[in-house]
Image (cartoon, rainbow over all chains, first blue to last red):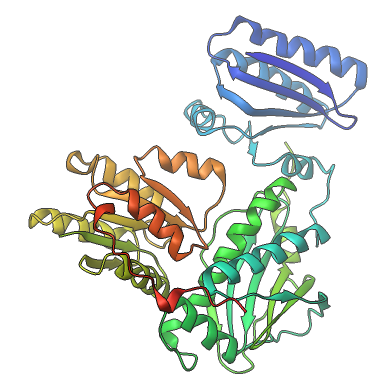
Length: 286
Length: 146
């Protein structure tokens, strides 16, 4: 087991690693914390457990003592990256609502008010560009060429294609929607390629292909987004179709459109933020 | 006879997967389910009538019963602890998820998007199935990249 307590300017980071079962050294966590608190006056604590296998009663006692101190200072304590064994342990001890685990460091910082929930992060663009290109190449046998992205007004509810696949993007720090919108000629081309048979028009029995494409694109983008600190939760896609079909984007956040050229026209990958949901997700630190 | 069950909530994608597999294994018998509950019914019925499913292609995110919960149920049953052979075919890409599901004796994990060759490479390695693969080149799925 190893314990490291680090001053991170706005919060104290406690890094735990190894197996904490019955380790007598756990008492040093509180000692190190108290020393750091006295030196810095910091009131927020993040306990990084990503490399920790299991918790013991001893570490819980130490964390409880630290929690008590930071609460008296109107600060907060969050775990980050706890594994299932640790989460089950906390649940069995009946303290999982107090020693709250976050999937990412950013999620913990947002809880403390030390980072903002992002309305739109320009770093989102590349993961979705790369993912869209890969999915259309591998699954649809279609090379697509990205063109200049643009912002769509939230008052404009119109999606730009004849059929769209939609999937929600939920993380601790960003809530929104991904929509892939394509016209009929592109749909006919990709459906024919994917199924290996001739599809001549948009048919209800095939439209869920576009939902699946949005699911695959999000799945691929998630890999790059994780490296940026966004841990995206899984979701089920859905589809809408029909000429000039419309979608109401709840919350009226920003919408960036990534257009791609294909031999059969332009397809659009849209990323929309849901500002209302972000507000609703704000949690009070305790 | 090789019996293959494809479990995915997208009916079109089930067709895509089955069309790929039919080129490799034209003599196999194919079944489809749109969620984990339906898949349990197919597997149990096949077992009951003495014609068990050989190979399952399993999606993760599905309504009613997802792929991970389906696996927990399946591997908890004595006669399903080792069989059928399970290949995950899913858009879930996080290493943590992959590691957690592999504990349920999953033979292979394929992430979407997937190519014909991706599936063929996996099927080739499945015991009792790989030797049956046809050498036919799928004209309709030859990459038509423009």
